[in-house]
Image: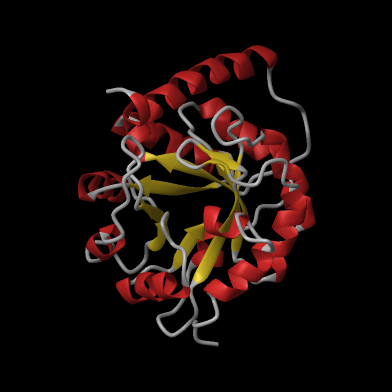
Length: 262
């Protein structure tokens, strides 16, 4: 593969280097704060409005700079005030202009759960998330062998965190469900080619048990997109770029939710 097609492998290579560096320097010794629960925040009854996992996302490999130098805390507060059920914070530096240091200030500024959005491949990254202020972490099936995913899920539970387990197709869904993932995200964007398939949530929802929280991710730009995901059976949507490009991310979030039942 070349160009965009090998971006996932490039990211994972950087992550392996970061893991070695984190292990070498060790983790800070700080008191852990009480956790907020992601699954509970995102779960909704059929007649309730969609929940939104709003994302602090300053850049991406596919989009380039989105909102360079944006203040994560200011964005998190806008999202909270606009009704976000939880907030996803990008912590990858090289590809997404994020930082692990964003987690605790965002956690301290808002009362909703904070998700560490990154490419986690090692237990020390989960431990780091817990120390730095996350309530939950993202685990990507495409980035992990099944045994690695099982180990990281166990590490997440031991750290007192929750995991949003991300899938891109039905085969990955089967892996996530076989390991008992309570929160599953369907990423409409293929991480290797960056193509988007907005039908994936509709395909996946048919096979997801009622007790699993289902989150639709990527490509969600309008209130109609939100309604489509709700009709498919998703509990929540994860939205970042669409909100971060707006003059007011909070106002953009309110527009997305404008057609939802009150």
